[in-house]
Length: 296
Image (cartoon, rainbow, N blue to C red; front, side, top):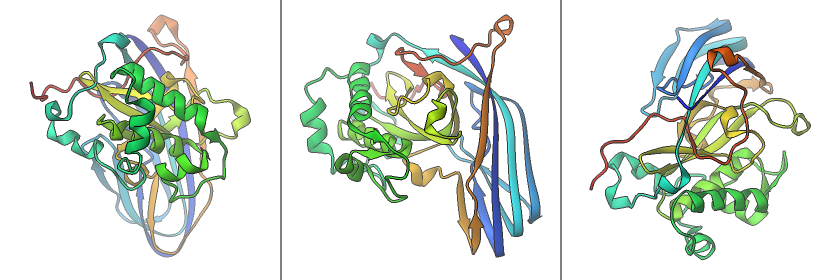
């Protein structure tokens, strides 16, 4: 264990279903080797049916239920996150022919990360940089320097190509652009949604946050192209190809929605080996690994 972070989080969602609505929610923390759930409590206040649960192959925990009338969902939890670090010079890009086949979805274009449209730009901008962690960091830095973080400047259907053209957006737009460029260079890259600790309060209230993981060496490493919070202050909810895979709420029916309310806090207990999140340029991984089925 290189560094342990304990984060306490509250997510509250409010709805009103005029007729029976079906809800699929991603509001519980992902559980993995490196993100351990210390405590959790999920409450559904309203007229709801039975709750079904499903865990995806990436560890995203989904719940599904029907509801009618006013509904409040409260998810409260505490997680311990074990951040693994590696020397940057040891992290190499893996050629597609050596990757496990289950990596294929993270190499191909997806709904919001059209890497095929950005291939020429990616090669012109980053093709001459030596492959490895340094090249991925350069891509993250370029996105941060190129795209202005402005709330309300993008839409639900804004894609990586749109963001490259408009040069503004929010965290999901930053993430989609970085993912598309990495995939255009044959690097597996995926979208993570969660909650971030340590962002400047001037950016607004606590909200859901999107960041990126890129596969280097034998595991996934974290990159946040927005740079608005420490990479060690990122809490994982869902993991997928892009935002279409990991929405915090997918709703079917005539339902009125209110803005989500979130809180997040970090616990400091040095005597227990628990420290506050801090900014670092070192490679950080919180995903399960290593991957052992690579071809040689």
